[in-house]
Amino acid sequence: MSGIQNEEMDIKYEEAGLDERILKAVSEIGYEVMTPIQREAIPVMLDGCDLIGQAQTGTGKTAAFGIPIVQNTDAGEESTQALILCPTRELAIQAAEEIRKYAKYYSGLRVLPIYGGQDITKQIRSLRGNAQIVVGTPGRVMDHIRRHTIRLDSVSTIVLDEADEMLDMGFREDIETILKDIPREHQTALFSATMPKPILQITRDYQKSDAVFVKIPAKELTIPLVKQYFYEIPKGMKVDAVSRLLDYYNPKRTLIFTNTKRMADELSEALIGRGYFADTLHGDLSQQQRDHVMNGFRNGGTEILIATDVAARGIDVDDVEAVINYDVPEDIEYYVHRIGRTGRAGRKGRAFTLVVGREIYKIRDIERFCHTRIESRHIPSSKDVKASKAESVLDTVTDIAEHDDLSDMISLIESRMFDRELTSLDIAAAFLKKAMGSDDNEVSDADFITYRAKDRKSRKKDYAERDRRRKSGSVYDKKRIRSKDLNADGTVKTGRKKPGFGFGRKGKQSFGKDR
Image 1 (cartoon, rainbow, N blue to C red):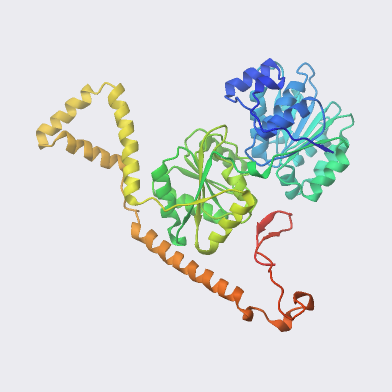
Image 2: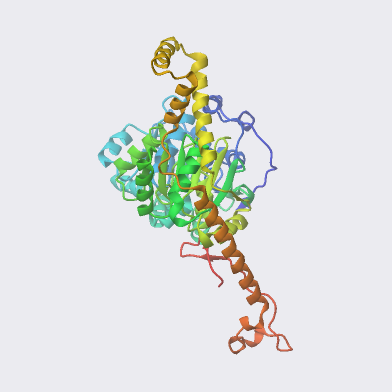
């Protein structure tokens, strides 16, 4: 296995030796400069070498393998030449959609997603139509291999996308069976956010010894264009805090993450009750329901999507303006995945995290692990929210006044002014108040301010007590101290084990206590 380290530079797609048809498609999509994983992986994939790519969600991995696969596929040959395995049906569908965009100007090239939850007979009919590129979940791909509706004889490239997630979901046996069944010499590419031992074992068993290892440095785990903030609030005021953030920033498309399905449902119900266009995505939904929810979010019918971490795997919507962590994630890596849903494709994004009590320590852990800074902010005041709403309404009204014919409307207003002895300012102010909506659900600013003051005072007391105990000899019970913990003079050796990350069954880093 060899590794490559390219200098950090902007490389345009035109400079990468890509086919003119690819460049035309990429230009229409709006891409200009390659992301780091694309810059390093695309040349390797084009050369037909085996590849191990380590990069986080939101770094452009689909293009990193999708573009070379399209260019290397023979559209005149009808057999399946490339197979891409994804952990979830959503990711398979989205990867296929993205690869189709790159293949737009390749006449006769078909890209087909296959996954569980869809009628297999329909997939069989589609496969009979010959698809050169198949994107699917491991279980359903295995079903088709057993039925001989997918043949691996002509497969020259296989990609394992989000390999660590597939192993976590129990697909290792299926993956290894598929890799063993490919009869001809082929290229194997593996993309993963982490590299646990099972992944490394697969690379040793099923990739060539000269496979190229590409790793995106940790400093690029979090996207620079994402502004990150956290807010300390009482638990019972989370819905109020979310409402204020939505009203103040007024994002067109928002993802909200909760740690449980129940909390996702409760929050959705609460926001809908307040007049927001919200929907929920979690594991209890059928495939048809999930497709309906995602279609609504993509086409703008749903402005707010509330999801759990597991259900959100594979969500790939470029223009998400804000991510709200309603609950601090239970796993630090989930934070990276969550905020990676915004600030994509060169756009700016915001990530807000609601913090209750001692969860502030988790924020500090996230900052250390992700090498980032999450700025502390106060929830916008009711005055700030009203000003923001008014500004938004007035911008819309001003645009209408400058570009539309309002003569009929002016006549109606003049008539009402004459009948009721109202001024134009009176009517304009009334329209503005109606457009801004009711503030019946508002909590007082004092509630947020009082909580922050109390919580800050409580933490200072905790810090003081912790420091006192560290300095005090009474913190140690010498009867329980082993000899190797003592200096020659009998005093306790300095230093203590710092709070760090524990490792769960899946080998992922998670929040931990002193161990």
